[in-house]
Length: 208
Image (cartoon, rainbow, N blue to C red; front, side):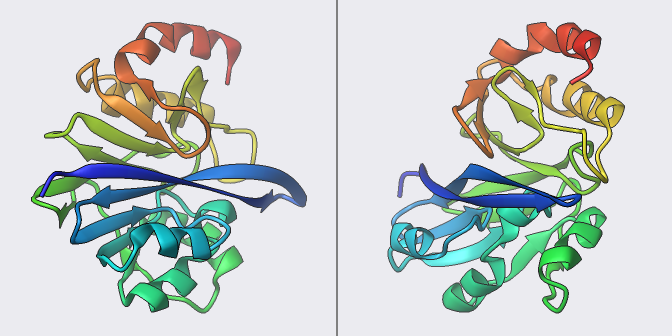
């Protein structure tokens, strides 16, 4: 089977530090005709279930613990009979949304097999302590969650985030990847590593 990547966009809200914002989230489905991994359980389960279309879900992976990325994780875990994976650095965020739901720990360097390839976990703290990116080296694709976007790093102005940390994560973990690596983001359009790497010093200078 040929590996393919499917995108589902769901809409809802993100809440933290007493504020709430309307957001559109990218949900990514990685796999083939038989099995998939679902990346981020954002807002609404029905369109995600529809996109999975009866295939076996090997894992439900959360790139980080903010509520807009984990909204329906327990619901989808039950529907697909599959485990939820989250880096334990984001447990404090997870508990704000799902205090009584358990998950399996993601670790840096962990590999999740699907459709004849491995999804490699890269721990990229900064946007949150447990933020991860998911790298498919054979396909030249990475799923960056809210760590890297077209035009710069993810937001670091709220609790549990840190700008120097996200810059170091991007510098040492992401910009070392091949320049033609496609970056599938948690919100908005895709980009490439080579399109973003020349701008690192600009981001540092502007402070976000």
